[in-house]
Image (cartoon, rainbow, N blue to C red):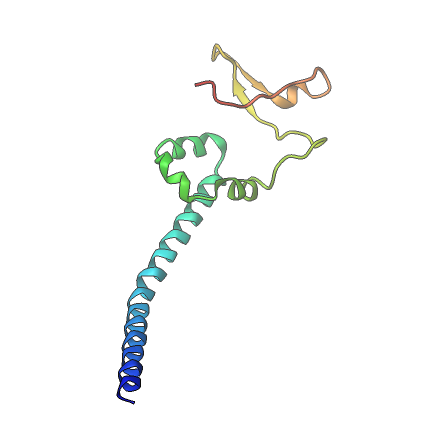
Length: 122
């Protein structure tokens, strides 16, 4: 019987220790979750900016931190989803390679096929 009492008190001590640890960790974990949620909301707001402003803002963002951002799902929602096959591409204007004039995608509509290729050449 003495062993049962010692075993019961040992279990009770462990339960209290775990309960105390859980109470101590609740606030830090809630604060961490709140900071992460705020960070994601901020990233979403940045993603909703026009492309030139988004690029300027992202130039200051540390790229290793992108590991903690669910970038693609957020980007698809922020930019109203992916463009589907057969859908018109969003209109945009870019400078020519000599930077003397600008070209707008819609100016080619109905005239000649346009191929858009995106990628990194580094």
